[in-house]
Image (cartoon, rainbow over all chains, first blue to last red; front, side, top):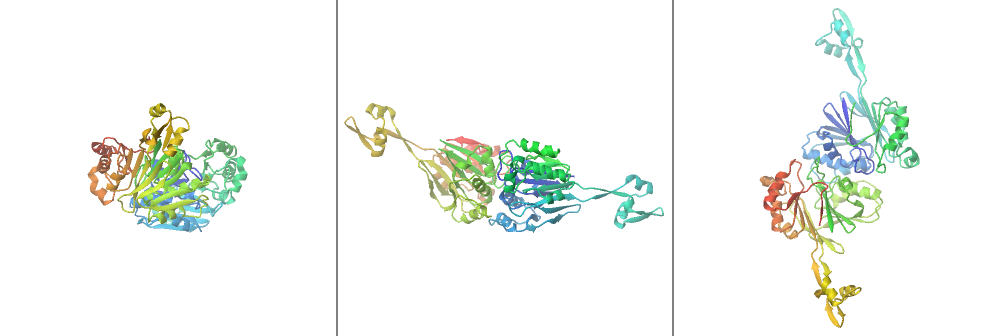
Length: 296
Length: 296
């Protein structure tokens, strides 16, 4: 089970109702951040997202609306005596900007901050999940991220019971791949099935891209930027952003289960227009709001 | 008339209810900021403080809880096509930290940002007010600020009327210092009185200091940091902060009209304890809260 919390859902500048971009995932006692706009640490407090559990921060790009919250966040973690290192992933070439921001003064930060420049591909791996990056199309080097739970093996209870598999045999069977039970050799594959893991895909800021369609194929949740209405596609092209129509087309083509429209510009006091446009193309669309949580 | 708005009232780190330190003044169509903690730009939006009107930002010191909001604020002003230069005042020696933060990347900021290192004394002067800095006692170079309206001259209406002063004579009398009316020479001082201007004094972060007593003498409003309860004076000394008792003693000795306790630590979920302590010494004490406004 993973819980996704929208800590900030605006773009470029905050509004009364939306803080700057940041999305958090909490899963199995660990936490991860995707982008870290100004105010993220306080939004986390407001929406009960546990900053102390953060393992890594994934930055899509080094535009300031997506990163300024880092400076305060790393210092608050230091004040709270964080013992663990913190990984910050950012597209290759932007490491220095991030380092300049995080270390702009001589603040005493006793834990290690590891800033890693990344390209497309797997960037982080846990026991039962991984995070991979994929290229986006924005003004500066930008990547999206897919947080993917690995397939899990489950025993077919009835079959195991009938064959007499019990107690420590399960572990033995898992380790060895096969086991003799009651004189009969049983193969692991014959008494198990696989469960697909959940997946969350985060694509901002960007023009619509094929790489997003590919990364988001069958995703449980696609968070896609929606800086403009479908009527403003020329502006979106010029500024390397997406319209609600374009975001919805990506979700439809990738056959996602749900689309959250994200990175809502200050100009849309009422983003219902964006939602109407998206729903016409992809029905299970919703507008992300600060503080909203989704459990996958 | 000046309107003072508390945009953030916490210290060190934000809380659910308090953003990081920043106090704004709006007066005669201009605006000024004192400190600029992370999130100040959004707090300004929430509490209808007009950022576009900011002439100058006065920073007490370069600790990150007081300055991190600058990075986003200057960029939002740029996005909004600010035409005017922006002055940022900071204690001498901390200019480079501020510059490193404001210019950490190559963001296109088309208006001029002038960062000035200051010591004690007058640092900014308007037509009918000035801002002066006074030394505080904190871990790093720190100053407090007094925003002082100059004395204003007012005509004694009845006297002027009796002597036949009217129309353009007022201006002439003001310019020349005296005027012959009905064959009689009238001196400006004989038909006018002076009105004391209002004053706002901002002292954070600091141990209690004599310089604050002096700067706050008779002030209409003293905003003084209160990081600890009176029972924690040893901690306050160690960390160069003040207790509620110490802040109240300053307000009492300076004969201020009102004291706002400010820079309330995350540890005080219920700051009523601080308020009780302060009120025992200085009755007109209040706890600053985010969004609160005071008109002087």
